Length: 281
Length: 301
Image (cartoon, rainbow over all chains, first blue to last red; front, side, top):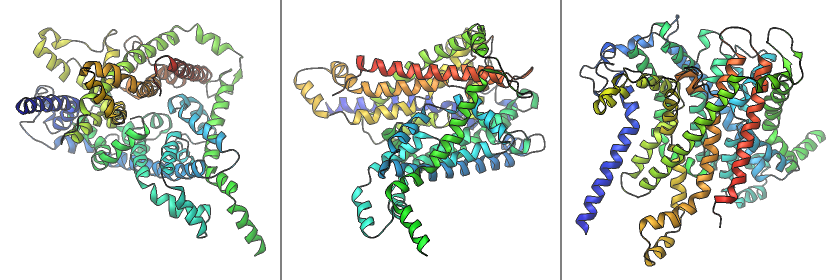
């Protein structure tokens, strides 16, 4: 019986591990190919491990194109993603606190509107928002990619944090109130420190989505020095910009590095966050 | 001094604090969602090319859209993608979740690995990689030709198969649905299985009689979420196929984009606005239909 069980366990692990390998194979292929001499990548595409390791693709790719190196594109992406994520966190936490803990007349109505924003994804809002931002003179600036996020416009971050605040015992609020804390004090001294896990999960998703956001860059970036990594990578890969496959794969690998590192560090809280809140990925 | 005190008292009221904390959303909703929506509703009744002032044309955009062959084509392509890609993705997620719900030392690692593609799948890097992989000289054909020698030059980007390149990409990203299934599986009461065992039900029967019915709310949730997502796919189709060949991968949102920002000719913002409004109505209708179907098959206790 126990022997049969062991064999079963081994078969299970072998099959699941093979499945996992197939799942990440495209990524492994991209990463390892970026270390092959560029002219051998297609010919040796079936071999995962390079026979000859080189960093040339990284050197060549980093030079960028049209007078701007990838340092500029990475800097733009970090600027946009970090700022919009900060805005998302602080504004969503504010609104979540109001909707979860405070009693006021329009509360229910506002909550329905928050849920409604989840039905208005950026793809539908693309044209309406573009025309509005054009009126405001925001086309050709970073504003459309940063400012709206300071106003809690992504409903599910509000919803996610609301759920988390719901799990904080109300007695803590009451105790702080008795000690003379105002509602503002309760938020900053009691609630905010206790919802750190929800903030971390939100921060990671927000950062990755802003980092990957290609649509906004396509609509609002008009000058080469403003390009974030998503747009730059696309242009770099265009056949007429004379790029080589090695350099493209090298820069692609660098571009997924921030998301991958965040994922590896916060893997556990992300997986739990997703499972409990049902965020899309 | 007196004034300052009364302001403080005013701000300290619970209802006032409620509005103060909600203020970011109230402003944001009005400024970045409400105004653009109203504006675009107005423009959808106009002829507007951005350069010149809009002129009111009544329902003409809407009438033209329903006679526009490309509109119907884009709608068909999007529905095909949603109707095939979404169930495949959810079924995959469920199967892998059932396999990974066993607790072993490596389980955490497995879950993370199967989930990783979902985390980075939306990036431009993956779109570029996907295009390269499915080129006739790419690794997909290189591997397929090992088993099917005729496949070494297979053209994935033909009219009939290009959509499948995009479907495979979306199915690959089943990770977040999988995690949601996993957490639902954990919540199923173990005693139910023990009772079923006593009654002599085998694993297969247990799955159909216990696991599946209890998972229907989760299946429903995943279906709704993924259907909406696939109706709105943009980046990957724009980057991988750009609607080609012969509009066989022209997703609806890509069509809207092309009307608003054509590579040549004048922008048709009014037309694009009308298209966006039709999309909003379609997505709301589909969601409503899914919710209406809920009572028919979702188990609730």
